[in-house]
Each structure stands twice: as C-alpha cells, then as structure tokens.
Image 1 (cartoon, rainbow, N blue to C red):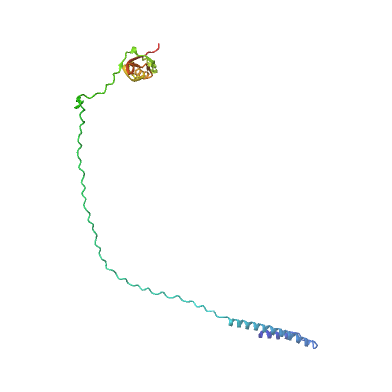
Image 2: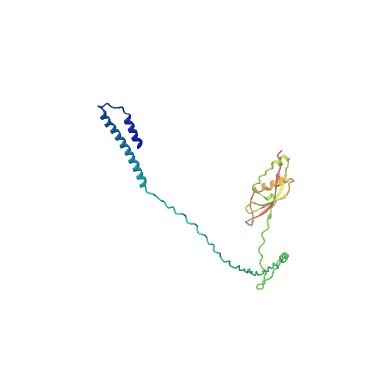
Amino acid sequence: MSQTLAFSADFTAALPGPAPFAEAPRRRLAAGVLALHVLFVWALMQQEFVQRVVQKAKPIVVSLISQPEPPKPQVLVAQPQLPMVPIPALTVPVPEVQIQAPAITPPVAVSPPPPAQPQAQVASPITGAAPVQPPAPPAIKTLPPGAVRYLAEPRLVVPTLSRRLGEQGVVHLRVIVDVRGLPREIALKKSSGFARLDQQALLDMRSARFVPQTENGQPIEWEVVAPLSYELER
C-alpha cells in the first residue's frame, strides 16, 4: 500500500509544471487518479479480509477412527485323560464238523441173462388141450425163369467205362416180387465177373414190373432168378 502511494506522488511530481491558467484542472486530474488508486487499494484490502474470514469460518472436520480391539488371548483348557480300559478278545467256539466220504463200492459184474428157453407146451389144467400157435406165414413160391412175364422189362444200361474197357456178361439176380408185381428185394445170385456190371444190374432191375401171381384166387409173393445179359454191340 505504501508503494502505491509513493508511485502516485512520484507520478504527480513528474508532471511538467502547468501554466498558471491550467494548474487547477491538473490538480483535479491528479486528485481523481489518486482517488482511483485509493479505491483499488481498498478493494484489495477488502478481498484479503474476506479470504481471511472465510478461512477462519471453515468447519473443522474431525474423523474418529476406531482402533481394532486387541485379540483376546485363547485360554486352553486341558481335558482330562480317560484311563484306557483293555477290551477282552471275543472267542467264538467253532464246532468241528466231520465229513465222511461215501464208501465206494466196487462195480459188480452183471452177467447177461441166459437165453430164453423155448417154453414147452403145457396142457391147460382146465381143458387139458395145448395152446393154439399162430399160423406160420406161407412160404414164398419159387417160379422158374421161363414162367416169369414182364409188364415192363428192366432197362439195361451198359456203363460208359465198361464199354471202353470191353466188359460184358450175364448177371443172375434173385428177385422177390410182392403181390402187386413190384420187386421187393433184389440180391446178386451169380456175378458176371465184373463188379461194375453187377452193380448196374441191381439198379436196372428196380425199373422192372412183373405180372402178379395168384394161388387159389389169392395174390401171392413169389421169387425168381432173373438173368440180365450185358453185351457190347459189334
């Protein structure tokens, strides 16, 4: 503030000396300038005063921070030790089981039963007559080869290998014919000397058909020895 007043005085003194007739306006001008300076200084002083008052009027904020409580000491309570009581071992008696192995009997040889003896004819105690036996089946009638007549003669087939090897001959077959004239059984009676021809003759005879034979008006079974001749064409 003192500096401001000195500056104003120096400024006023530095002004050139006015003429006698202009001295009064200059004084008024100097007084106006001085008044402005004074007003400026007063405004600065008021601003500083207001700042000081505001700073003094600020509330003081105090925060209280609670300190953590110290940890409580742990009190260890000693537990009483219980006396150890021995536990007796439990023993369970196990009954003894005796297992007897089954006795093995040696195998007994079983002899076959004796052949049945033919029962003798015992007379009935009531009637005194012997039991009636069933009638025996009638014997198969044998016919000569010349009395045999065919409804269908057997087809003779000479095997191909027999043709190549030149095998030929006559095969005699024993044939049992049923009541319908069909060959029921066929067997080799006399060989031709070649097994291949014999087997072929057995097959060819099954294709034959005979005229049925009767006796006393009843159809019967009969047998015959039929020759089959296998000859190669020349």
